[in-house]
Length: 102
Image 1 (tube, rainbow, N blue to C red):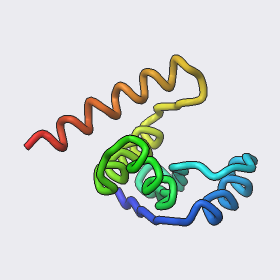
Image 2 (cartoon, rainbow, N blue to C red):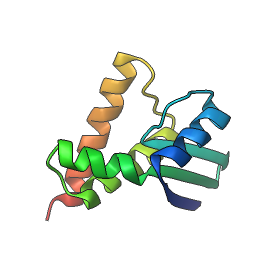
Image 3 (spheres, rainbow, N blue to C red):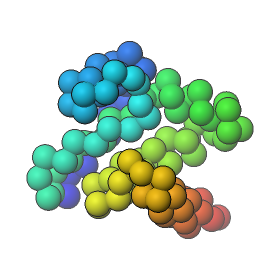
């Protein structure tokens, strides 16, 4: 699989969100699944920095969380309803704990 990860400002990711998802706000992660074996993950670095401060986390951990989030989206997880969000966030935390357990 080919997976690209790109970092954008809130302003730029807002434009991507408008263009591709018809939502007029910045967001943390957008995925672009081109095919089964080729995808991109767009991450707002501004949002990652802000959330790292808010949640008293490192920027690296926040970015890792966003990458996991994007990969979960590429594997069929959604976060549009409270039930889906709860399931997805639980899986994110499970994976994050496994990765950072050293």
